[in-house]
Image 1 (cartoon, rainbow, N blue to C red):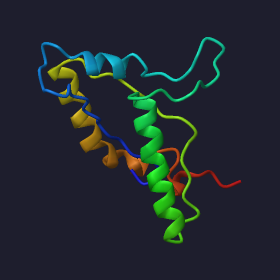
Image 2 (cartoon, one colour):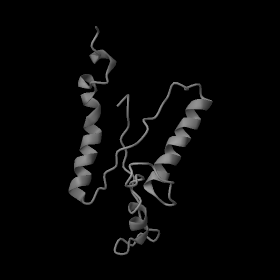
Image 3 (tube, one colour):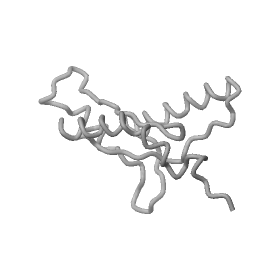
Image 4 (cartoon, one colour):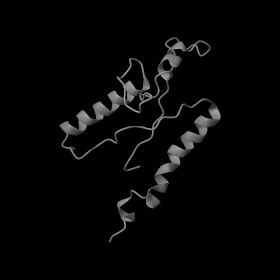
Length: 115
C-alpha cells in the first residue's frame, strides 16, 4: 500500500529447536510496550517493540539522508501473534491482496471529499 506496509517477523529459537522455544517466549512476553496506565514503557532487550523501533529508525535515517524528509511513521504499530499455519496462510493472502484495495481506501487522495 502507498500509505502503510505489512510484514511478518519470524522469531526462531537460536538452535531452531521448536520444541524448546524459550527465546521465542522471551520475545513474545514483551510484545506490547504499553503498561496498565496506557503509557509506553522502556524498550526491552530482545522484544518485538525493539525490533520495530530499530527498523523504523533505520528507515528514517535512510529517508533523511536521501532527501525524503516528508516521510513519516505513524506513532505505533499493530501486532498479531501468528499461532498456526492456517492463520499464517490467511495473513499472507491478506498482505498479497491488500494493494488491490487502494482504489477504495479512505486514505487514497482520489477518495478525499472536496468541500
